[in-house]
Length: 303
Image (tube, rainbow, N blue to C red):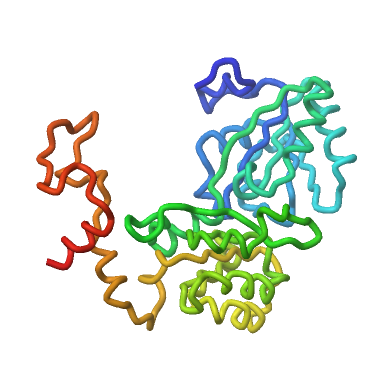
């Protein structure tokens, strides 16, 4: 633990209070059991909890102290939220600013932190589990499968918040990586069209609605059906799309090609007995040498 951080006093859950500061805390995707231990301790001990009531489930608030102040912010602006946090800290109170998911993604914490810094108010950021991680766990898939896909892109399509031209969805789709698309359900037709400029129409897409909530629903469909299913289910918000060839095993009725089957037999090097590393030196290397190409691994898998 960083003992220079405001929450350095969290060594014991029994402690009655934490230092006066703003704690920007990730609440995870919705399931209270997916809170981190640190997030739970902060919620339990804070004097004030400031939260987006449209995105944070009430069950999480049950962990608050009975005498703690609870402030819902769904109808508030930045100009109202930040001053009240500053005022509470200057009055000697600890404030948890609770955001859904992970604060580093689409949470608008940057502008809050700038104003807190300008006011010389101490703050700390506590990470949370993001919806794409919770969805992958629910689907029981790895989004970085050797010889298939090794990159994850977190993105959104331009809407009321524009994206830089270098980050337009069609350009990102050219990488054919595992692409997690946030905040785009209202523009699903345009999103699908841009994705299909590079991904195959049969690429699996997980349509994830309110991941981690009691009414969670997940559909895995071909990319060409993404907009159709979204509109049929009237999905306009709290929806995440995961586009990835790694989802093939999660989609019923998908016909796997011979190439897909071969790729699936390629192992990660991490636990391969022929791969040595710091904690497992002197491994027996194959005749091909220590760095087989993907093509050689696939060829070897056929035999």
